[in-house]
Length: 276
Image 1: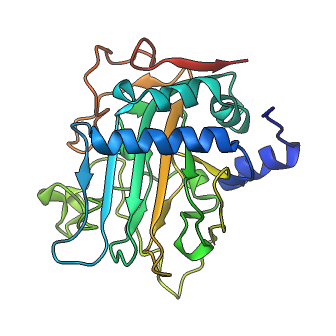
Image 2 (image 1 turned 135 degrees about the vertical axis):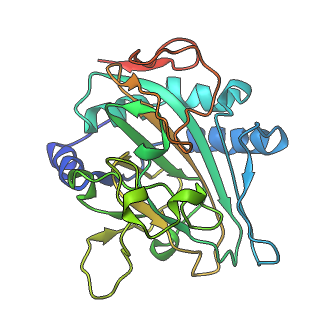
């Protein structure tokens, strides 16, 4: 499929920090990704995690940085339009592949994916974005939810542990604001009914995708309609984004590499997948 983006779509993305693109990928590519996830489930990486609470119905599993052993993933990022799609929305002339990340939630899963930004989880300085792709149909209430415009707030929020929906390092769980790392804030309660946030989501089908800025706040509060869901995200940077080691324990690239501080993401582990 030849990529077609309108000026209005690009403007929406720049303003909202996210957009749903309909029919972005053909059935061939969705089948390729499904085959990749099946292979990934049989051959999980060291980053595989089960977020399911003990004794709770449903289940929530995830894996990331598996692509070196999953040929379907690298085939997709190199040969579909996914690299060009994100670059054009972000007004970039290149796309460097950084990470794959699949999520599967079973029906009745009560554990939400907490509100968060992606950027604070990574040792990255510069532009970064995700392409979120459902591999089966998702109703709006079960889909990824995003806070439109939050990428422009200039805020950097503390990451959360997805299994307990709380800050990971114990020393940061205190209410003492003096313990906060410089430059970080605690996440406010975005579900507070007395506050007004522009929370958006969509009914989605296989072939659709959501592209969002790594600073955009997003989450998935539960599978409220008792539907499960399989989805995969691919994260990208541009060639000017650099490796910026962070002293905080939650920031980690998640894969062994030889990058030095200040170097751009490149090489065999971070391949260029599109250039204008």
